[in-house]
Amino acid sequence: MFGELARDLALQVAAAKAKTIDELLGQQFIKDPEQLVSHRIYVVATQLDAPIRVTRFVRYDANAA
Image 1: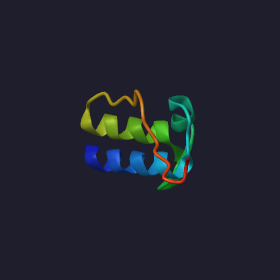
Image 2 (image 1 turned 45 degrees about the vertical axis):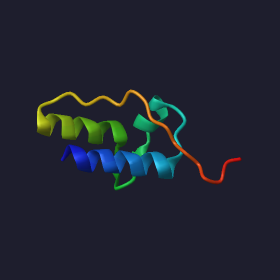
Image 3 (image 1 turned 135 degrees about the vertical axis):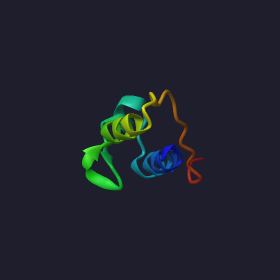
Image 4 (image 1 turned 90 degrees about the vertical axis):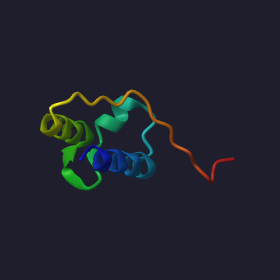
């Protein structure tokens, strides 16, 4: 479950081009536009009964100079 969330967040970062954590967490979740990324993290954290926090991310762009 956590591994799937990690993959989904990586896809989210790659596709949605967020620049900050707040921007990322406020975006619509790619796999389910009915919910926000922050809500998806909350759901998985609740299911695992463990805190999950995104503290940083890095997005590499192969086309950037």
